[in-house]
Length: 561
Image 1: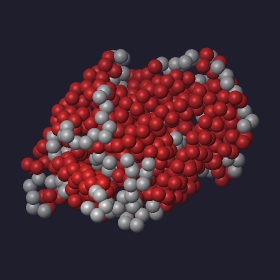
Image 2: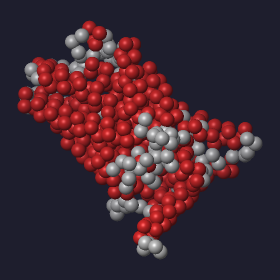
Image 3: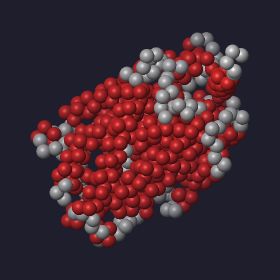
């Protein structure tokens, strides 16, 4: 099978990576990914959907991300490999589930890159110049705006071309700025204007009902923002001490970001002038929300700082995602589903340059099709949730089929955390509203021909009969295929408040999603098998452990022995 990799082959393909990233650099990577364009637009978009209850949407989003991140932290520490997030489903369930999870994850991450460039240009369109106003037409970037965003994409990839150490140093410095400016923005806006009547007089705390809070979690950019927790995991192959540094980096980045985002949401809600809310929160139409509010209250210095940060924050995130997506492509290639050239890592720089170039091309395509931050945020969010569901299943499945694997991070509560994470992920997918959920699930099917070529077409052209070898992969991955089909059907038939037809009554629909999540969770855990990729990886990790032990014994040996 194409999914079978020998330990030496895979090890050789990644041997040029530099294990140079410590806890601080990895935390900066996670936090830098989370605080990108989301903080510039997320507060207004969440408020437009949920009103003041958007505050709770950020808390719920953080809880969902943290629960799911705990499952991936164990996996990341177990398998400290580049592009880690695209590998775990392959290890536990073989090629079909592994490929679908990898495809969803890659789509979710690579589309963030043009989203960050779009955010920068959209903020620039508020400048007091005619040429700047011509960059954005109120809904999407104009041709000139797309051209400028394309230049930013090239800059992101240029910063990743030379060395991981250059990326780490640049990103850590940018992340410090990205944390300071949002904190300063929230503080300044609260000090300038803090009108609690905005909550009391505009439909109350939940003007659009509680369902709007859940929808805000799914599509307002909240999932988009917190999705950055996985960036340290995708750089696991370059972590110095992944067993300790990865969990710390992932959890710390989510918690710090939660505090910042809640502060920004509160500041936005209270700083909006009351006369702007005559038609409700959804009618607000700021092009550059926080900067426009700063100008309204005479904080011109803050507006200038925000216009500058509209380049720095998204650019920092764009650089991070350019780095992590290239490692994901290299991981997909090692899974056996891309040409060998995309697994090559430059010896001098430790950078997978062919993968970097492929992602640049795909980023240009996304930019050409989806020219607005909002449309990209919706697609990224739902694709992200689909990619999440393999983590809870894989972590417990691997405990069942590979109990002897070294687990530097092993939570006793994982048997409880994992099914809860599956429930949370399924709920967020449902909250994304029909037909958006159906459209993104359809995008997931678009990638299947690539899998079919490598697993069926290519072996047939070589005179081989792949069916017997492919059968266990199909059996093990069936749960994920049926999960997506069933969730699409439930989204279509579900409550009208979530865009469905209303065939499933309100309240009952959420219970149905919870039950289905548990059913597919246990099906997925039970269907895992010791596939060739897992066996090969176990052998590789054992060889690495033996080599490390031999080096330690050599260092301890008496001089002259």
